[in-house]
Image (cartoon, rainbow, N blue to C red):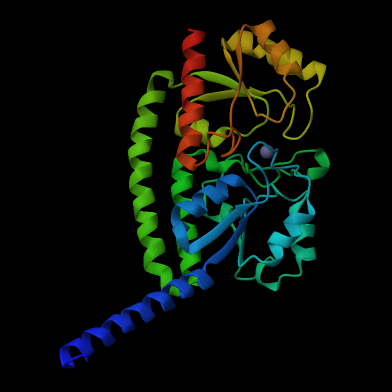
Length: 313
Ligand SMILES: [Zn+2]
């Protein structure tokens, strides 16, 4: 038989057990289902969402985010999403809008609380001053959509995500804010390391295949002098390639960065004609298996770029 104290302890233990069970089922049931267009947005969402969200990217990190082949599985994912995060600035215009409509999910339609365009949080470069339309073949008509390659933009986006997650899941607002503070701290420490690694190459010139690098270049003080593509989204032409080689020789430009989804034939001929090193860089998390988060993306690219500049000094 239990005495009064024993009974009290028993009741307390049962209560704690019940609360624990209730809490775990509650957080399991309440996890926000987040779908992102790209892996970089998924990586940043994961940083602040922790174990209170499920997050998955539609595009793979080795795919050109402008041109993603839609799969039936995308629709299944979109149907179950509480939140859809896009990069915006028309990056996904060729594949995502019809999927949003076809998903029939009212929560994630453009303008609904479950649709978030991450570009609103970031510093956007290359905003056209004149008239630019997609009819001209330019896939960056609203400014450069590859803005996540500046860690300061990563911080701004993560802050925006923490705010949005808290709006959709108010009971975990403090958790998301705390996760953001922790990310911010780790990112600042990493930035010091990255800035130091890149400092010796301040002002160095490079060419990129696609115009996907201006935010990285601005942050780390590199000078992008040209592109293998005549315009973003337009394949190389012989006349543009000849002009580019001439420019690189005059400017003593010794590095060509190529996104992993482009053919290396033209870059390699530019490299041999100009004496520049041609390197495949990763614009996105998941471009290679070992690059699994936002930090590893910068670690990978900075190691690659510093090594390339060392080899052509
Ligand atoms: Zn682009």
